Every structure is written in structure tokens, then in C-alpha cells.
Length: 306
Image 1 (cartoon, helix red, strand yellow):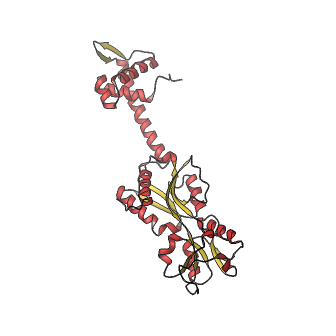
Image 2 (cartoon, rainbow, N blue to C red):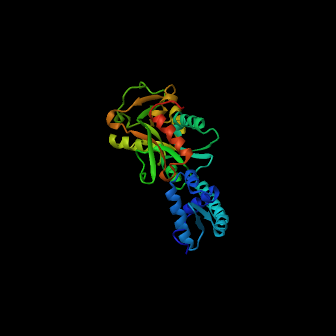
Image 3 (cartoon, rainbow, N blue to C red):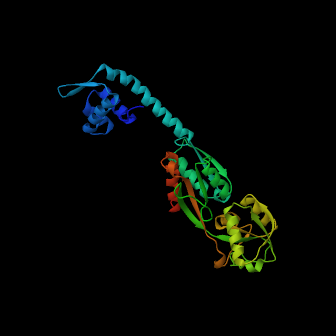
């Protein structure tokens, strides 16, 4: 087995010394003390169990054995750097591409704001956007198919030891009704009054589906659901067409306030969603994710992109 005194770090120090031919200059290049450089060279020599240097006055001079070691050490260190780089790239770290997953409802405002800020910070970065349900996106993140996701963390089981969670904002839910409805937009409603109405809903796994179920559990009845769909835009189109009522997050209000009647629920039905940016802790020093996290913190504070 290779002696434990022979390490890549010591080989790097050794190569710096061979280049500079002086302990002090090697220490300056590496940002180390001269004592640290001398100790590394001495213990490296011990690890090889043969002399690499001789002392001439106060100077340390390399022997032919050191010249031979330098030839191999350059290849070893260069190959190690290449291996580290290829490994990081394979893991999606440091690429010029960022894979972001998002809920459909966040594509109206949140995602465009974050992407605009990202492109200002890292103009050459390519951004791949995937839309899906809360559960689908979290599964893809866990399987390293996505680098970061924007989801509701209020109703998701997320391991805080594995994932970094950066809250962006909180959101409530509203009753969305067809424009032909006799109720007035902005009027607070009681779900108990809608027992006989038909509803449309998202499928299981979506954040709004979870809030939908919780609200009706509080109301004490199971709504008549005529159809379930896989994205919030299709769901609200069905409401516009008069198919039924639904519950939707407040972040959709701006787009639909003129085509639907939107009414807040009474306080005891309100289910808050915390929308957050989630990514792997072991990738949090990736330059792309650092830029995304910085934009996320600015968004959470209500600041415009830099």
C-alpha cells in the first residue's frame, strides 16, 4: 500500500517547490507558511523512504530522484484535477446548464423574474425548465434529474439534512367561479354554501390539490368533482367554460381576475402555502446554484433583479 505520508496535497507542494526552487517562493505561491512547505517536503521524503533533497547551506536542492518524481507527480496531479472536473460535471456541478423544475402556477411571475436575474448574473448559462406537480418535481430532484425546484414545501416531506430550502413567499387559496356566477368578486364565501355545486380539481401530487382537500375536510363534506386535470391552466379554463368551481392559489389572481370571479374563503378554510426554492445541500457551492439562490433571496425581499 502507498505510505500515508504520500498525499496529493504534498505532491502539489512538492511541484510548487520544484518550479520555484525556493521554499519561501513556493510558500508564497500556495498561500502557506514556509514551515508548512518544509514539513510537507520532509514528510513526503519519509513516505518515499529515499532521499529527494540535500541541504547546501540554507538551501534545499533536489536530487535526481526528485526530478524523476516531478515528472510523474505532474501527470498524477493533472489527471486527478481532470478526474475531479469530470466527476463534478457528471454530477451536474459547474456546468453551463441549470435544470430547474417548477409548478405550472409559478410560470406567471416568479419563474420569469428568477430567470431574468439569472441571465444578468450568468449570461452564458443555459436554463432548462421542467413543469410538473409538487411530488413529481421532488422525485426528480431526489434522483438528480433536476438541479433545483420551485414547489410548495407546506405539504411536502423534505429531508432538511439533504436539501437546502429557501422560502420565497406565502400564498393563500381562493374560490374560483365562472363569470356567470351571481356572487361578487372579492366577496368572502363559506364553502358550506357550495355543497350542491360541481367542482374541477387537479390530480393528486399537486400542491393545490392538497389545499383543496384540506379546505373541504374543514367544511365537512366531499365535493362533487366532475373532472381532474394535470395542470392548473387547464383546470381554470374548465372553470371559465362553466364546468364547475375550483380552489386556486392567490398567485393566479392577476391573470384571471377579469375572466373569473375570485373570492377569498372564510378564515377557517384558509390553507397557506409556502413556496420555496429547494436544491441539494451537497451542490450549494455550485456557481449556478449560488446565483439562483441569490436571486431567490432578492425575490423573497421584494427586490428587483440586479
